[in-house]
Length: 109
Image 1 (tube, one colour):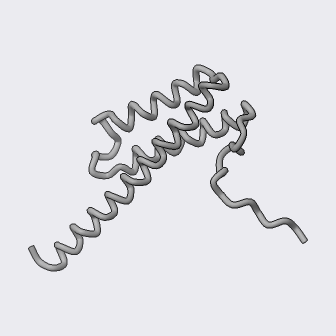
Image 2 (spheres, helix red, strand yellow; image 1 turned 90 degrees about the horizontal axis):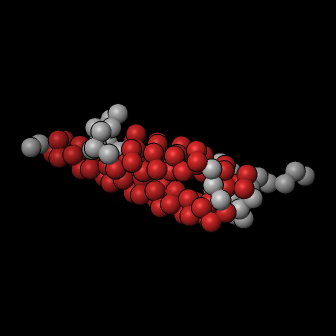
């Protein structure tokens, strides 16, 4: 294998590891929001979104082959946004809906 091919393999492996780490982070957040919502009371559609996202992520059938986890991360992100919005609607503290991780905007002068 030439130096260029080796470098490409290393870059692709690091990118795969980074996407996998993001996916794990989203899955952990999704479970946390699910637990908070379950304690407060959640709708059937919220449960379906949660379980559907987890089943899709763990399923061997994907839109994109499994070495590339972008579709799994996308499904987790959409489910997380949905559950964050549901948590904000339910009035759970610390949830402001989608984009809650972003820093607040500077106050006007």
